[in-house]
Image (tube, rainbow, N blue to C red):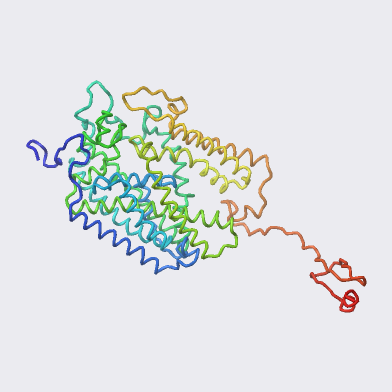
Amino acid sequence: MESGTSSLQPPQSDPLDAFPQKGLEPGDIAVLVLYFLFVLAVGLWSTVKTKRDTVKGYFLAGGDMVWWPGLFSVLMLAWIFLPIYIAGQVDMYAGAIFIQQSLHLDLYLAIVGLLAITAVYTVAGGLAAVIYTDALQTLIMLIGALTLMGYSFAAVGGMEGLKEKYFLALASNRSENSSCGLPREDAFHIFRDPLTSDLPWPGVLFGMSIPSLWYWCTDQVIVQRTLAAKNLSHAKGGALMAAYLKVLPLFIMVFPGMVSRILFPDQVACADPEICQKICSNPSGCSDIAYPKLVLELLPTGLRGLMMAVMVAALMSSLTSIFNSASTIFTMDLWNHLRPRASEKELMIVGRVFVLLLVLVSILWIPVVQASQGGQLFIYIQSISSYLQPPVAVVFIMGCFWKRTNEKGAFWGLILGLLLGLVRLVLDFIYVQPRCDQPDERPVLVKSIHYLYFSMILSTVTLITVSTVSWFTEPPSKEMVSHLTWFTRHDPVVQKEQAPPAAPLSLTLSQNGMPEASSSSSVQFEMVQENTSKTHS
């Protein structure tokens, strides 16, 4: 360490090298290998423990899960910022940033290795393997993340040191007469300016709440775990534990990321596009490397391996959940509809093959994520959530709390809402946000309407569409809303009225051998031996 450098500061490095030489040592690799073996053993053990030879056992863990494995859910959310199905590929890219640089492996080689292990116990064990391995990985995430949080605060002198030093964390190569690379003045504020902020407070309060409602209440990744619970009490216990753990992301994610900017301003806070391109292959900025940079430079041998396992755990947690849930939707909702007489064995095979296809598609999607995330992976995920999730959330809420909502209203609400969301999504891909030193010449729809505000607009349009179409079309029948809305959940079950069965047709053979129709209580064919013999004669 150079003279004059604080004992709490890590060694300085070439600002053009985001990951200077330091990687995983033999002790770290040993911890990582042991972790992989342990997780694989837990996954394989769960395949023996649960009934995975039936559709319910494979996709719903036999409906026999207790409450405590459910606590992984909020940590999965915390590490990947709202995992939606399209974010399965984002998860791999985010994890690959860490894996590639720490192990010095090829990006796709690292991804294929992780997916191979993930697919083994997901395909073999179904939801039970996913839940048990995720419960184990939650413990690893908590230990590793809390440990790194302690090292991070110690490196900057606690919370007061963080508040003081964060606004002084500037890249040494930043232009003095440029505003690029400056820390935001509202960095420590939750409620930020509604017009000029990167996260306006009305958008956070309302626009972000709608996709969050979709995730926690309707997303297959979460709902499938509650359906796998032993009973309602266990399902509520898992949700309650997740709610308590929800306070942790601020301390185990946000603050360590800010500490990383303080300790490594030349890399994490780079402002020159050419330098950023050399550091992290992204001219828009290198904020995505903040966490892995902190892990590799700050933690001692052994703990680096543990944190490597934590990052891999977060990646595998979300991927296994997405793979299993998407497989469930395809098998039970699509394939079972196309082949209603499919056997349980066929459904099991289809579900496992679909997981393998998802793995392949996910690998092929990595370059798209790598090219479009623009230095802010968090913004990429949040914007996609804001464009695609509000219509589904609104339709779900309307269906639960307004029994007048019908199929036509829900259909046209989804069609219009998703169409508008896809238009904005495509525009975002076409008109990429310019760098700090470039003029913003994007269309007004993209430049002036924040993605969180667009979420609010999209929700309002969907709400009006569902309400209008449902009101001017026929209401759903009583049997369609019985026990299926909040206000009818205690109503007696209403069976669909059926018309009395028509009298079956009885056919007899007349004297000339021609059939005659008559009404009877059962279908019968009366063949008079005498007449038959005459006919044949």
